[in-house]
Image (tube, rainbow over all chains, first blue to last red; front, top):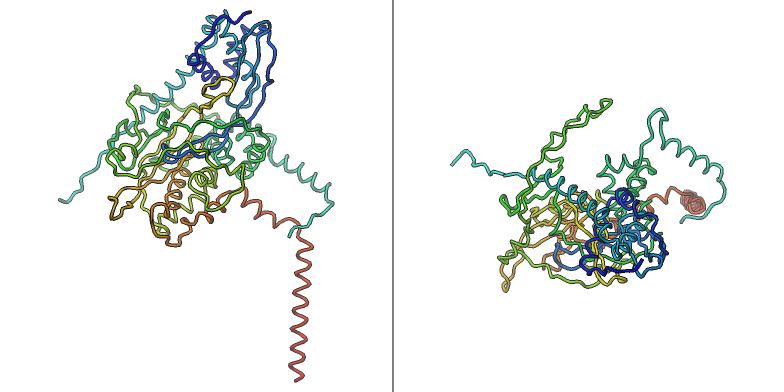
Length: 152
Length: 364
């Protein structure tokens, strides 16, 4: 399996970001179709933390807010140049492995297939979840009226 | 001073077995799952993440279960676990402008662009116990109403005040901020380090400090310019790739206060600001943080030190950490037999000496 498709950084960033935030169970279901893909570990899944930063006043000097758990790994498809990276939120090693596998497969002739069976459904789920919350928030949008006091 | 003691292993083992049994409670009542705690005790989970300074809802829920609901004990468990994790890097500063807001309110502008969104709030509830929740087989409540989403942006209140120069500007900087988890605290700490400490500080302590500043101890007259709660993506540069990706998404609460002016002969009067940013849906904590942040800025803003506790950086920061405080406070219950023995002997000797003096005086 040769690396035939070299994605742009922007394309790759989009799917890696999607995979990082995806529901691990849904990703596992979607990836099941590609589970017999042979690969070698370049870096076994490893759990660690990332220090999340904020800005004073939202726009000022950076400060350390607190840490976030993530799991990362790297793999290479057997007999291929395609290297996949997984960096996912939380401590689920299978989630990281599946993310890296998808990243690698997206650089092969399977890209369209992976897009259709994995990335598109994940994106749809993520959009639907965000929309459902946004719609509930929209229903709580208020208009405040300042009351005029009785006396003149 | 605490002196190490030996023995008691059997009693300790038995105490821990009993603790496990008590934690489980009546076995006729179903076991509480970590998922149930994460989903249904979400605000407790958020507090443990914020003060444990580690964003991981599953771990926080597990810690609450293990700690029998003692949140400070749960925070202790999270802090201890955190130290075992290798640090894989740091994120870009999160962009709260891009927040997917569940809630966004302003107490300063009625008709702000983007509107006021209440979100899932306790505000305006009557604080009456709802006995329906105690009923067996609680029926699923009606799903929350929905409305079409307005795509209008929600600009920062402080930013549109700033357009007219009416509020002090925050100087943007990407300088590497100091990290209290990597280096011991030193004072003066400076604002970035203070904000880190406040964000993981004890909610009760910060609430008390903020309240004291409202009641007149470092009066700084705050308005909540804006309060937002929602999800923001967390981006990080991945060295192997050479570009940023989003590695996750977190819920945070942000509070910006607009406070009374600073001005001088050379500069026109201007509003000043306080800032709170906390993991999770943690509104009381974020507002408290903003008030305390503002009170601690007295020097930078050329205000008088009125000697209020909330203005004393070292006092606030060194007493805001509930794990540090618990450690020192609770250690006094551990065996101090040798220490106490020496004091006992001292007091006996003093009494003996005083008694001898009295006998001497009586004889004279």
